[in-house]
Image 1: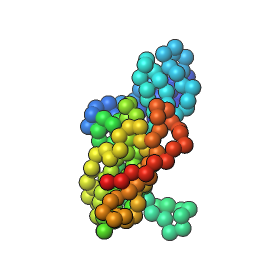
Image 2: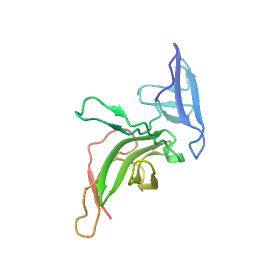
Image 3: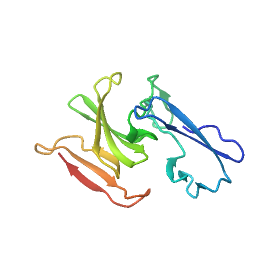
Image 4: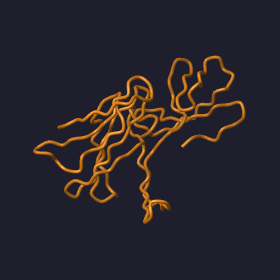
Length: 170
């Protein structure tokens, strides 16, 4: 999601409060000397870092992998300061009748990996961060190996990118 853009102004949105209940729209003149918009995804303004989009998750379905239908459920949005730019890049795995959603939590302090579970796609339980910043792109293995759960994740450093994939276990 991104606010409608106007000529000569960069508009971006983020959750202002730690509970992610109030969305703030920040309008910045493109010629403002305090704006660094070299990267169209991440900007710096007056020493603060912002993403240019506010992400969330929606449940959709498809029978052919090309055409999708919104399931009509409310979106899953950020709900803490580590998610003030939203949640994105979800991976889903089913284990013993429960669906586990790992996602990238995006906030001013970086990217971490959050976990949500559901059995019915109506009620969700949040488990907080399972991998701290700087991590993203986590995928749980679909079954335990021995007594442990495993995942693949991507530590990212201080900027977007990096070609690293790590394995974690619990």
